[in-house]
Every structure is written in structure tokens, then in C-alpha cells.
Image (cartoon, rainbow, N blue to C red; front, side):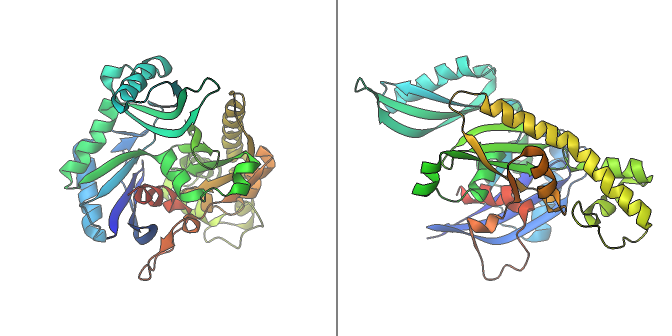
Length: 354
């Protein structure tokens, strides 16, 4: 029997959802997006629980989304992710205690203020014949998680899980590992560019090796356009979506050819800050023991649809950059009419965890 889960991304400026049916394989049955009033969510944290609950209730009702099985994602620098190794522990209860003990050493979050989860990635035997487990550890501040959970419950949503957006992003954009890909031993980097911030996740093809939240989002591009062309924020947002970093765009209503050229140059200049943050994060990852070479960078999020963005970033990063397609790892229901673009990568990945 198939199981249906709504993957829900709660951003700073919008809500995005994907209803995913899982029955051996995953298939997207429905997608929906809507704007979110400012001030409800900021920097990955809920600022107004009741206000967010009202917005969620209206969103689910307007789009006729099922509310009985919802999985949400979190993206915040107050969440710690580490990979640890534990040797000589066979009993599951002892393993949980050992993970909890190691969490106090590995992550800068007091355990009595935290929510902890872990997953065994690999099991092996070392040279001395002792069993060794490679464990992925995630620790988040309890108040951070509780605010999202309370908002969802007030909206009448039944949560089946809380996940990291970084994990969901990789789930939807990284295809199942092949023997060739495993032998290649290189990393794929997924980057979802949000309104206020962006999520970076590095995968070896099987697990998340590294993740970071970057304080840069599409709003920086909108602001740069507004200042450069002396436009209101709403008009600057419209202009941004019509500009292209590749070939010179067609005539844009309300702009002269000179203003259009100025807008493109403004976008290119504003993107340099993001490119520097991206390169800095990748250099930090590669400075860690056991890190892999970067194979490619895959973009997601609404801003990923900006024309010429991948090519522009590729020139700065020095590796292949492309726009991701969530439909490469998931089926599409026959009744689905809305396109599933890179903006839906995180909600699709959340739904796939059913």
C-alpha cells in the first residue's frame, strides 16, 4: 500500500509543498507554492508561531493539500551535523548512550537544551576484529524545533517527521549511487538559493559529508537591482526574474535598453559576494580530513532559474555548475500539471523520506 507524505518547506518569504506517494518508488502527485508574510520566519527560525499557523492553515486549505502526514525541513546554523565513528558497541541501547556522550564532545550545544537524532551509515570490522559503526549525528536546539512543531499543530497538520533541508536537498538531486560513481570518489555539491539564505550540502553519492547555511539569498539581488535602477522592491523583483546573465535579454517593459544592460551588470556584481561565500565554504570542506574532490555543483531554489546563473558561477567556482532537476530521482503523477522546477527540490526531498 502506498504512503503519501507532504514535504513542506517553510521559507522566509514563501511556503512550498510537494505531495509525494511512496510505494517502492516515489512519485510526486501535487506541488504548490505561496508567498508568506514577512516577519513570521526569519534566519531559519519562527518569529510568530500563531501567525505562521494561520498562514499554514490557509495554504493547505487553498491548495487542498492533505494534512494527515506532513514532513518539514529545518535550515539553521544552530543545528550541528557531524560524522563520528564508534567501535566495539553491539547493543542498540548502548549505542544510543554512546552517541549521546559523543555529541557532548563533538557539538557545541548543551544536551539538555537539544534534540538529538542519529543514523548508522556504515558497519565494518577494523584490523583488530572490532565492529565499527560510522554514525551521522544531528543535534538541534529544542526551542528551534518546538516553534515549528507548535505552528504546524496549531494549523491542524499532523507531523510525521522533522528533517534537515540539506538532507532533503541531496535526496531529491543526487541519483542513487552506481558502482562507477562510487569508484570515482568525488563529491557532488547541492546549493539551494533561498530568499534570505542558501543551503549548501556536500555528498559523496551516499551520505551528507558536510553542510552549511550561507547568509546570502535572492533578496540581495533584488535589493541591488532596486538601488541601481531606483525601483521599489516589488518592481525590482519583477525585473530580476526577467533579466538574464547570459545573452542580452529581450526588451523589458518599463526599462530602456541602457537600464536593461545596467541591470545585468548589477546582477553580475551582486553575485560576486555569493560566489566568494560558495568558494570559501568549499575550501573549508576540502580542508577537512578525508574530504573529496568536487565533481560538480548543482543549483536549486527559485533563484536557480535566473538565466545564465550556472554559467556565471561556474566561471568563479572552477568546476561544473548546473541547475538541478528533482524529477531525475522521482516519478511524476499523471494528473500533475504544474512543472516541478528547482524551487521544489527541498519539498520533494522531504516527501521522499516517507
